[in-house]
Length: 199
Image (cartoon, rainbow, N blue to C red; front, side, top):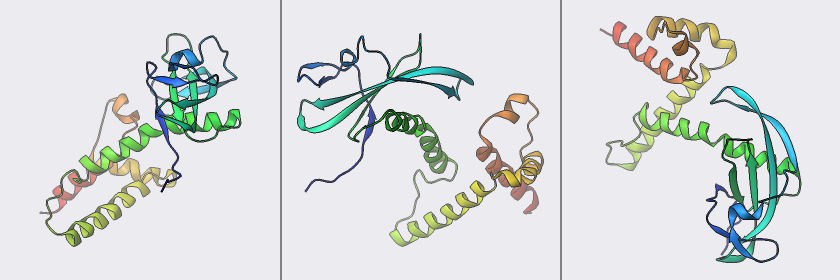
C-alpha cells in the first residue's frame, strides 16, 4: 500500500539525481548555466533586508525510485548567498506553485521554534508520568496554557501585553524590547507575577 504524502526537503548538492535526459548527475549540475525563470523581492527576516531572489525548477528522478516523479526547485538569493536546492514530490505546474513551496520551506523555522518553545518552556521534553491517561491530561492542560499564551500575542491586546511585560519581565535595552521572542518573555512575566503574589 502506497501513501500519497507530500514531501519537501532540502537536498544536498553532491547527491546525484536523474535529469530529464536520464543522466545521473550531481544536483548542482542540473540547473548549472540555466537562468532563473522568475525573480522576486523577498524579505530576509534574519538580516532585516529585502533581496532579489531568483527561482528555477526542473523535473527530476531519484535513481533508487525512477518511477516516482520529483521536482528540483532552486532558490537563488543572489551573489554571495548559498542557493537552496529543494526536492519535492508535488507536481509543479507554474512559477507560483514553485514560489509557494520555497516560502513554505522558509517558514519551517517558525514551526521548529514553536516546537522548541513547547518542549523547553512548557516542560514537555520529558514528562515524568507513568500512565498514558495522566500524560494525556498534562498535554491537554499544556495545550490550553499554550493557546492562552498565543492569544495574548493578538494585536488588539498589545496594550495588556506591554503592561504585563513591564510589570513581570521588564527590559530596558532597545534590542531586548524589539526582539521577536515575546512568548518567552510573556511566560517569564507570568511566572514572576505568580511567584511575587502567591505567598
